[in-house]
Image (cartoon, rainbow, N blue to C red; front, side):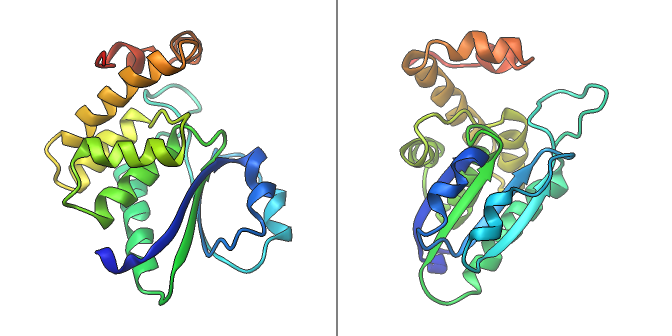
Length: 191
């Protein structure tokens, strides 16, 4: 699917959206918490194609949590395929609340789909180049791996990225444990 011709890929959090309003963004994938209002920043943006998904940035079911589903993953992949149907170069921006977890998992899905010959490590290296503070949501990556028929390769590459990120950002371990995502810290593969 290399005909997508994505000229620029960006990942950010909601607070950073105003920084991107005049950067020629053509397509936006918004992943919002279920009860979060639409970001006000989009009111000032030039016209762009946008798709909104709503689910929590969690990896385990708890009361009041809306986990991502296989349907959400298919919607992300379908959005990537739809971009291919629009001529010209694209600037795709993917955002979630902080621009670290749901958005980086989604960007990994789009890159893996767009360039299926890339190894899982190459996919997540590209994600890391786009967003240095990436920590892809492991539940999403597990489902992306299955949807793309990658046999666990993306999931294992994500675990290696986790290991590198724990070296690069030592405070991640404590922060992730405090929000109930310690299982992801435990699954990291040391570099």
